Length: 141
Image (cartoon, rainbow, N blue to C red):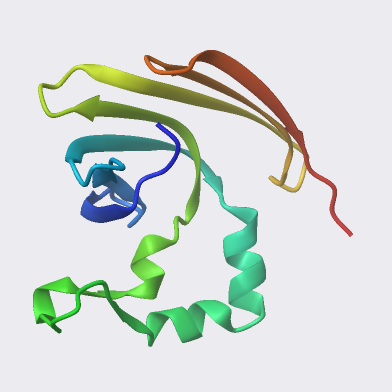
C-alpha cells in the first residue's frame, strides 16, 4: 500500500480536524479497494497552521472551494481549509472493508517551551510492508 488515489473526509473532531476518512486504492488492473482511516490528534496546535494563518493563506483556503468530481455536485465541493488539521496528528488506523486493521501509525512528538515540535518519532505497522520507524527533527528560524 503506497498511496491512496481517492479520499473523502467523513467526519471531523471537535477542533475541526479531519478524523475519519474514506480511502480508495486503485490497483493496476482497475480494481478498487476501499478503506477507512481514523486519525487522532494531540492537543498541541499544528505549527504550520499558524504560520500559514499569519501569512494569510488560511484566509485564502477558507474561500477556496475544491471539487473532486468531473461533474460539479454541491455535495462534493469542499472548502480547502477543511482538509487542513489545526492540531498535530498522533495516530492513524486504517481498516479494510471487513474492518480488519491493515495499517497502524503512531506519532510521538517532543515539544519545546513554545509548543513547537522539535522531533517526532513515527512508527508504522502495515500488513503489507511490516513495521518501520522514522525520526523527524524540526528546526525553526
